[in-house]
Amino acid sequence: MTFDINKIRSDFPILQRKIYDKPLIYLDNAATTQKPQIVIDRITDYYTYENANIHRGVHYLSQIDTTAFENAREHIARFINAPKKEEVIFTKGTTESINLVAASFGRKILNKGDEVLVTAMEHHSNLVPWQMLCYEKEARLKVIPFNDKGEIDLSTYQMMLGGKTKIVALPHISNALGTINPVKEMIRMAHEKDIPVLIDGAQALSHLIVDIDDLDCDFYCFSGHKAYGPMGVGVLYGKTDHLNFMDPYQSGGEMVEYVSLYETSFNEIPLKFEAGTPNVEAVLGMDAALHYLEETGLDAIAAHEKDLLAYGTKKLQKIKGVHIYGTASEKTAILSFLIDDIHPFDAGTIIDKFGIAIRTGHHCAQPVMNKFGIPGTIRASFAMYNTREEIDKLAEAILQVKKMFA
Amino acid sequence: MSIEEIQEQIITEFSYFDDWLDRYNHLIEMGKSVPLINEKYKTKNYLIGGCQSRVWLHAAMKDGLIIFSAESDAVITKGIVNLLIRVFSGQTPDTIIDADISFIDKIGLKEHLSPTRSNGLMSMIKQMKLYALAFKTKSANQ
Ligand SMILES: Cc1ncc(COP(=O)(O)O)c(C=O)c1O
Image (tube, rainbow over all chains, first blue to last red; front, side, top):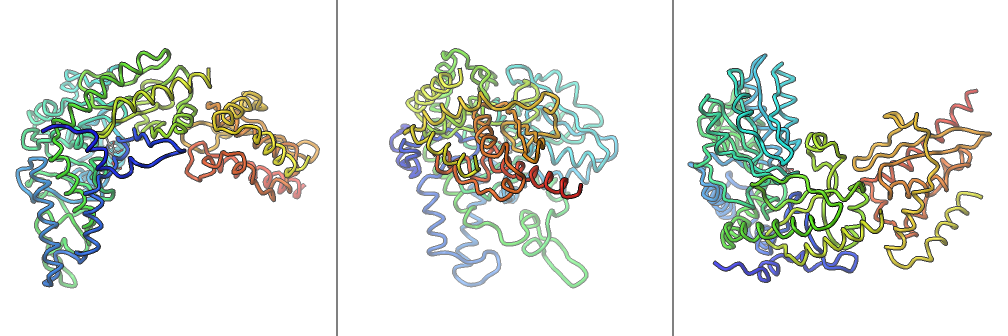
């Protein structure tokens, strides 16, 4: 399969846009990716020709929709190589998936004095739900540290896995530093002690091949919108035994099997966890996005992004005063940096004027910033449609920033 | 000068720059001359909420007029807060409370007006007006 960057760029209509009369250079892909035309079309087609509520009608449209919806589930299960399609639960996104596990699984297994392990590089989404749960249960949250490069030390991790550890929650990829964590090994180590592991895969899905069966994780969470799909939809993968053990997260329609006025029996998984009308358009849009990823080829995308990362790292390192945070040897195409002691907000305001979308701030990972003793960083995060030329423009913008704030 | 006149003055000043670069360079210059807050007020109590750059704002009443001072860790934010101080400092509580701030839009810094903008221009204006209100209430009670 050849990787045709021009064809890819033409598939994303927003890339034709001008911002302040300059071509948009979109480097905020870790926040959300842009959508290819086929995803947009899928959503429009759904409302133009197919709209109906699913799972509850005998009429034609409801039936084809239910089929499309369940086919999407099957496709997504295949995409992440989940053992069973019933193990794929649709949620609003990563945040909801993690909250669901904390509420329906964590709350059930955690007792006073137990421990939950997270890393010091969590997005707040994979930190705050565990903090709150630990507070409620009088359990302890323990934090696995990382070194100056942004890497977790496995021997420290090994020591922290103790008799009281009831769950480990890890990011597959750090959104602030780009580190790809050795999750497979970390899952294996936890499993040796029978400790279940949740992986926050929000940043991973669009950058590398996620193979659930191979990882053997207990839970895996991601959002459609960070993988070229729509907002408002995500997935919780969970092992069947866990999902059966867990209580429903929300209650209402769809998730029930039989309801009388005083008693209810719950539906089987996955519907047990999908109360109410789901976001059908977004599920179908996410399905289309994953087709697009498959057609383009994740290997080819990863190779392209690796080139961008190497090129960008070199380019930025050549600029005096630029300091990159997160230099793990296993890294995705995220460049988090500061320019001398220029405040990221100042730098970001000027870079924006070049039509370049980058992110400044703490990236919802304040503990990471605290570790480095900085208020935040400037983050350029790349996707399949970015080019070396765009990185050159970013470098020009940085030089301008240096000139203005020197 | 009245609040209106000062706003007009700033608009004229910025009208000499026809591209964004010069406007921002001017803003950066403005940031350097902000009446700095006394170090002892650089505490949580004087911090204006806004997640990206920190802004401390202090107000004192002198002869019926409010005097502002401020500081920020970002230079552009300092420039913006200084513009506001030029407009509001030395005015009476009532004129501050009633003031219509229209110059920001006219000097090509409209993007800073969006309520979600993280430098918190809106919060700065709001905070200044709150100070004015507080002083007004205080003097009315005396
Ligand atoms: C690592 C990581 N986890 C979780 C999230 C939260 O994702 P969402 O806002 O889609 O729920 C993000 C998004 O920024 C992320 O980068």
